[in-house]
Image (cartoon, rainbow over all chains, first blue to last red; front, top):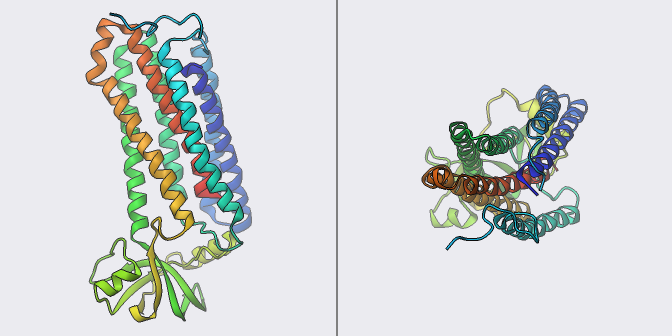
Length: 68
Length: 288
């Protein structure tokens, strides 16, 4: 597996973490009402979206590089 | 004599030799971290309700460090892609950012460790009354920072009180304890926000046990320090390899560019593995 393939797996895992963390923080905000939890939650969800956008850009840029 | 298959692919594996080597090495690393993760999860799941320390790590700092490592993975892959396009200057720039991220991660982790080494739990022989927000409650276990002779000491234990002949010390108690639920913790923190710490004078004779947040404090901290220190060691080694290839080893770019690109890829694969371990470590240690 090349660095390209491993990077795709890594960014996918990182975006899953970002979405899960975002949901976790927003749930914490709804349960406890701490404003900073809401800020972290929204920032994390945006980071998740950003990572997926980057992943698309990365794949487009390195389309000629092998996955092996 | 030339070392075979450093650049050209080996017919039976379809990849160059160093890539086979690094993946075999990473497989052994998966077993190492997998065993430690499994141990942690089994201990966590098996702990009786209310006994497992939680909410003691700094989530904003942990989140920031996660972002630092994700950024470093992006710069590693961009540096490799730059070399493939023949842009050596861009490669040098991206790897310099990677190295700065590695140093930043280790610096922040050191700060976190330092904070833990001067943060204590005190078990008392007889309960004391403390203010939790507006309420006054009786507790026999307190978390907080110790102040003695104008200093915040590190690594004190029950034995230290005897050895240093400490008659009493001041404790700046936290508004929370890990026996609380997350909701109770959030409520107590909100109540205490902006209010000055109320110091408690504790006599050494009243202390049943004293421990900083070190591996000896609890199973949780034993696993926390084992996993995070092992991970930090990997970050340090990875950064050393990247630095060597980036600095003294960069001469190879002039003599054997294809082999040099492969070296950068191999170091990048290791770096991604280290970062992926953190992607699992962060939620398991900081959030659960």
